[in-house]
Length: 403
Ligand code: PMP
Image (cartoon, rainbow, N blue to C red; front, side, top):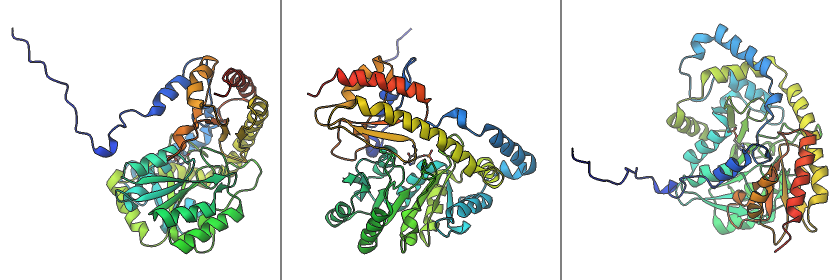
């Protein structure tokens, strides 16, 4: 018997845009965070105990028994009309919207990818908040875009810095998360929104406005999107998602836009995935029509607020002098900057040993990362668990004095 010749294992010739991305640097972090006995604040994971399981089950049952043949068939790339009508109805509270202006996506993440497909050429510049949502950076980067971070303060992106960056870098678009931002939890007040809109109107740069968290308000007041400011509707693609309000597992979101770009978005969506799941679209439409989403979101937000309070209370005394922590009025995340001399990534193994995990903040920066930062999601655990775990994080921070 002859032994076959030794050959190197076959390797696909991967596109340059994915080179060096074989594994996400965050994979190891999430693996650490998932270890038994570790209280993880790393992921943005809604508490599954709070899903409206009975209502959602009833909606799936209703769709399959009343619209089963249609629900199991192909649909249209724009999205099922019932869902687009419900989306338009919700959006119209702040921004008059017709169902024809809605494009359904499989979560906002696909929306970001569709937008990138439709708008970006290799080499185009996208301006983002510093820090911003990591997976948006990824969706734009794999299309060859150059991501440039714009300075922010407690009120979000700084309008003057945005204008300066637009003049210097001539971006194709600006990507912002104005309400209960990921990763910082910050919200842009109305004056800042107006100032940003003014810059975009004067410079003619389109806005991609990502708003998956806006309804999760802890104060009862909600924020109209920048798209609703005068003149901004036609130059904004606004993304919404059901992930944080109903379920991330159903993978349903939508985009709102005006004019000719709507056709391009539908063509891009068709090229990527034909259409989002019809069963899921009809079920979400039924849910929005028959269930009390606002009531459900109010209940969930009330619980999240207690958890935010627990984390805010517990974290204040454990932070070193000069550290900064945000106080989110909604959403899922709190952001702490420990200050110069600290490296949150380096500290993570010790934190995991102590039974607590967070996401080091460096990964949320398009450029010039602040390595002393960390993102902590407060929504997954009870106040007692949060307070206990943050106490242990305090011991880890105390054992890692400034370099
Ligand atoms: N945008 C932002 C700012 C997010 O935080 C997320 C979820 N982490 C998404 C988009 C994508 O969410 P989904 O695809 O589940 O709608």
